[in-house]
Image (cartoon, rainbow, N blue to C red; front, side, top):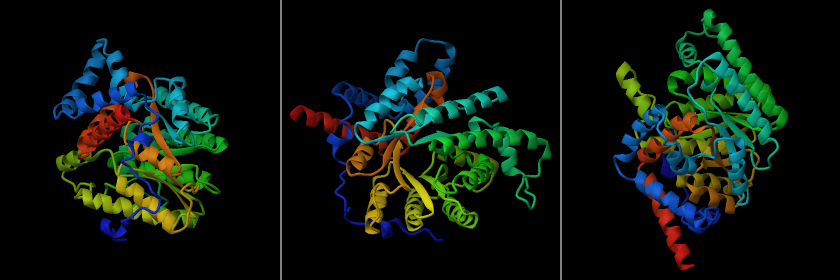
Length: 410
């Protein structure tokens, strides 16, 4: 399928009167004090050198043992993370529920390798699933396969030639891979038992192939009657629209519901740098416009095949969210269709999340939690993402200022 130009998919007027400029809805859940704290953080992040320097020295300072935990917890951690424990996170989730916003829970610990750590992460994921099942507004949890699989193993399997059966031709790693598959199965089995969706995060392109294959296997096992397992499609890669179509064909052939979370992507600079260093074609789209076009085409594809596709519009792009709403309404589909969900990261794009919720959409905040030291890699990515997306920090800041001004005159 050739990507449809973005302008061909956009509609001039939203049928549902959603305004992403409505800051009263966007920040109703924040007190004046909290809003001023957010203003300070985004104002600081808006300085050109703050994020590049901060993301380099913060992990170092954490390792030195200097007493900076309090500073981090009361600033960037508070903005983007639910808490250090499930109990702390529950308070945030309860507050969001008052405004019709669900939660995607993410145990945000990354980068710890070793069999003991892999088993611990697996048990934590299962623990989070069981907790989510006790809450009315936590329909999903998020997992990373690299959280319970060795990076080197994933890369080896990604690069290895495959036999006709599709199995990778590396017998010496088979026992280790079997353990990874068993962990994934246990997580998905618990999710199916408790009716909680599992969103499998995307990885770097040199890890992604075995993750895709394993996730499709889990869909075939657990998505027979309803979506439980969702793969993540990064549309800033030029090959992912085609992969989405292939995944749909597999789902139809094997008789399961395809579950996908549509994102633009999170590893752009790292991907381009590695491709340049190793001399292969970058998997990243040549332009932002190409990424936008594929993303919007993916939304249209999922809605056109909604009977057998469950999808999450995980985007901070206003046009893409409005497009999804408009297409649903054009087809006479409910904004709360069981196969459609919207999501944004906690601490970002409240103007999208809360206005979608007000309009009657099923929408959630992606809410990570975990000890400060363990969540630092996630926080550094959030800071980099805000600074790398053109105008993102400025947009957040202008909306916060607008709401503070409105409250003064209200």
